[in-house]
Length: 272
Image (cartoon, rainbow, N blue to C red; front, top):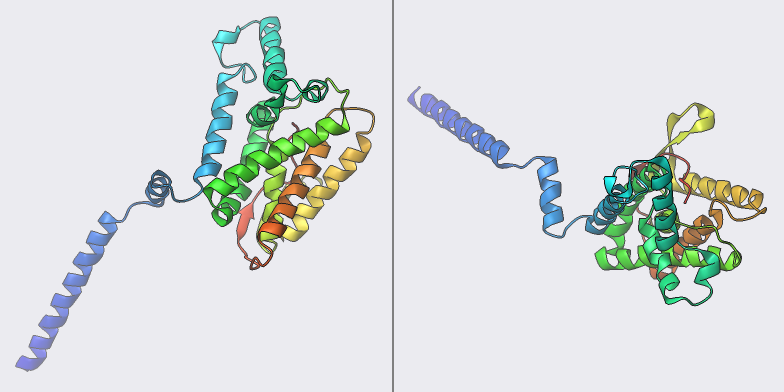
């Protein structure tokens, strides 16, 4: 009997110790948000992706395009004039870009951080957050940053070369975002993407990336064919960016393992 009681006491002590340890762990373990913030501060996680999102949002809010900055006036005529000058200064104008003007030569980079409307900004930010995180983790911070800027600038230059006489101002990161989509398709073809299709009453459906992203490319191609009357939405820049991203990932990672995962996105694309 005494041995049995001693064993029960030892078990109770062990249980109380385990409970105490678990309580201590629960108190000391940070929340998921705190873990994510800690990783970003230490340089881990998708630092470049979130930095690009923050920069695009900050530039837009402070610019006349948002309509929130009182520096650019409150009257409609004054604000429209400020917006027009802002887009012409920092956006890509094909006719000026091809003249060799040093100031115009920088606009393929500056235009990546300029957006024309809230819808344009939010659409690009959504796609960048959804697809950029996994692509950055695969490529690494520096390579992803150079990839994003390089493909985005080349996509805008390609549109300018296809429309050399155009005075249409091009702004937005849609070419760079398209490159991220192309790289995502190559690196994570089996990742399941939750998409909202307008013709199905926006019912969320999950499909592999190799189905969703080629469907998006097909929509851009059809739109580009219908846009033959002159410059407008830069669908060509979307297609060039997507192709550049896919080819780069194909060449850079020729033996990439077929990685899976999940992602959520709204089907469609905002217009630069």
